Length: 286
Image (spheres, rainbow, N blue to C red):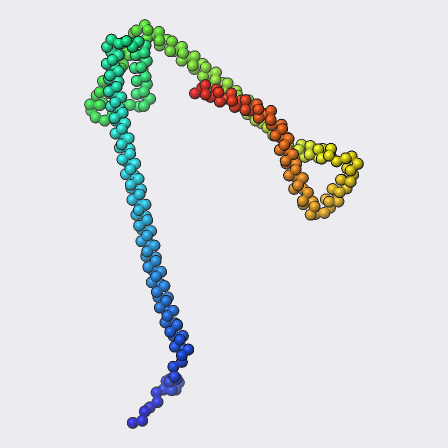
């Protein structure tokens, strides 16, 4: 049986083309590379998503820990406050007990010490609402009642009455002195503001006139016409004009700065004197 030649669509099959095989192999490699790149990209995206989720979760844990620490610190502060209040009640009980009996402490001293206890209670806002425990609340109410009762007894003492009168006079003097100092401070601040306005009295226009006059004195009288002609000629040229205008402006600015520094010296001295006086009065007022 004779062999039949194999035919393609267009005729006999051509022998394999090496270049076509290379192109097909290159295409397959590129397809594989693209597939692997896509896989890698997907893996990296998944890794970044996981890392982002872990980071968010850790931040949430940190916030929860911070809140927990804040709550713990608040509880510790409240517990410490209760300890301070209990110690305050205990010391006040001892103070009342010592002042109630026969004491070598003058009556006026006892009176003002007990008044300082009431002032502290009022200033710090200590009451039964801030005290924990029925026993502590009852002890606080009892010791405060004893303080008021002892104050009422001490208030009948002539020594205490005389001390109160003296203290009231001293307080009146203090208030009057404080009012006088406050008025003096207001006057000094007003005076300082008025002096501050006088700083930098030389304007740019005045500095320019002074600058021209100073330069005129430096040029001999015979050279003035030559200088004027030179300036006029240079003004007709663009480049020298662009150089001269900023240079003259800077020189005038520096000249104005020097004039103001010279004029500000006595003003600065007055301001420093007033500032020193204000500081002394503020210290005295405090």
